[in-house]
Image 1: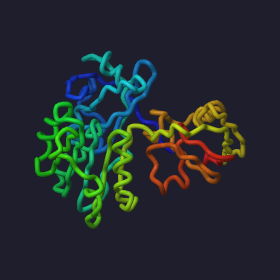
Image 2: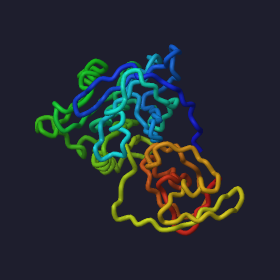
Image 3: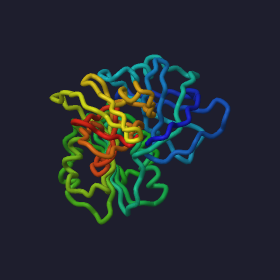
Image 4: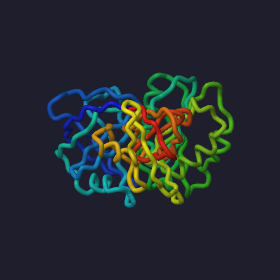
Length: 316
C-alpha cells in the first residue's frame, strides 16, 4: 500500500510562459534552503484551493534542492486543475505540495531510450539530464505537433547535447519518425521510457509489444478510457475481517471503502498516480488504471478506477 506523503507549504517563486500554452512554475520553501530530495522521473502532488489534487513531474535538476520545477499545460478538456494554475496562480502564492514520489524511475541498463510526447517531456528531461551527468548512453526522442508550439526546447538545449536529442514535428515531414522501426530492435539490456498523451502512449505500447516487460517504463497522464465500458455492481471482501462490502455500479471501490471508514491514501483518483494501490488475494479484477504493469495486475489493484466481477478479496 502507498504511504502518505509529507505536505509542505511552498511559495511560487517564478512563473514562466512557454509555447504550447505551458507554464513552468518554480516552487521554493519560504524559510528552508533545501527541499526533500527527488530522483529523475519523480512527481509531486499539488493541493489546490478548490480541493483538487493534481500530480506534476519534477523537471529540474535533482542536484538542486533549493527549488522544484514543474511544467503545466492548460488542458481545456481537463478537470480544472491546469486551468486554475494558469488563470489563478500568482507569484508569491503558497501551495501545499507533497514530498516527491516515483513509480517512473531510471532502471539499470547500458542504454536508455526516452520517448516524450508534448508535455510528457517533463520527467524525461530530468532523466536525460541525469543520464548525461552519469555518463550513460541514451537518446531522447521528442514528438510534438509543430516547432512553434513545442515547450521547453530551450531547456532541452541547455541541459542536453544535440547528439542525444531528436525532435519530431507533425508538420515537418523530414523530422518524422516511424515508431515501429525505431522500436523494432532492442540492444542488449536497453531500457525504454515514455510519457505523453493517450494516443501517443497507445502507439508506443503497440510498437514495443515485443520488448520484455521489465525493460519498459511509462507514466500516463490518466488511465486509458473505454467509452463502451458499462460499470456493474460487485462485492469487496476484506481479508482482515471477512466483511462483505457491496460496490454499486455508480460508485468506485475507493468510495465504498471510505464509506465504512477505510481511508486509503489517494490523490489523482483517475487511475494515473497509483497512490491508492492495494493488494488483492482472489477474485477477477477488471483493471482500468494506467499505472500497473501487466505482471502486477495478478495481485495489485487501483480502487479509484478499477472494478471486479463477482467478489474480489482485498488484502485489507
